Length: 299
Image 1 (cartoon, helix red, strand yellow):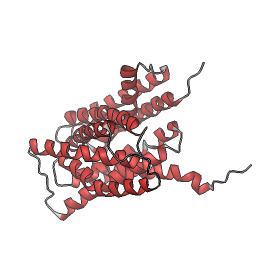
Image 2 (spheres, rainbow, N blue to C red):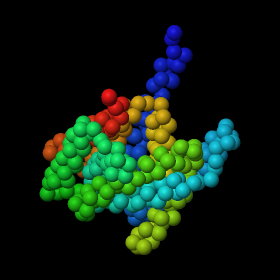
Image 3 (cartoon, rainbow, N blue to C red):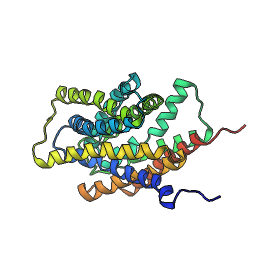
Image 4 (cartoon, rainbow, N blue to C red):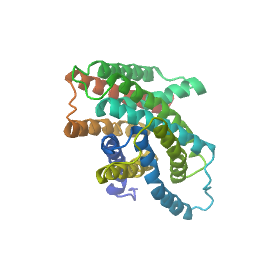
């Protein structure tokens, strides 16, 4: 019996996943162009996304009024963790190259499994450990092979903050997974964004950052961050429910590739040959680790 789904419908999740990953790749570019401090850029990313997320959540609930609109503690915890994630990553983007910041932040799949190993005693497979070793080796190679004219004000600190971003996002991922067990994705995104925005504003004020963009171009960049937050993460969340995890984990790795290309074209941040090798090894390790964790257990 032939499937009733058309080829286009079957391809839509993959198209959405690639589109979402490409959209998020623009986030570090908008952070550089926002004319605000790094944490303030994160504040505008979440704040400008809130009206759109509210409309989406209310529209989605019309189809299922049994779904709660209240936040619940996991969604609020996700907001706090995402605020820490954005603060570290946005500072990493400013202090190191766009490519380094994006690749190192994509160590998240490894961090998620490591947290599950430590917190829930879910021992990883040997293949995962091999991916972990590859990912860390690639990240170290990228950090050590920047060359004399390294882009960014403080590349070592920027690399460290970008790697820490993966840990914060691992906690965010687990909190969202808990929240999604009883609430719609749009509701979780709304409440987590609402909880994270004031934290980022407080960080920006405490660190003395400029909060308001200095020109219309800066405001457009902040609006771009809000659109990236809704479109990029929304498309990925929708696609992940319709594609195998192993496939999705590999496709999402288009994000650092696109981000590195944009950083090269817009900010002249070309990778050295050794950095390019490190990036490939790092992303290959992440893909291997995620594929290993997604494989069904064998007897």
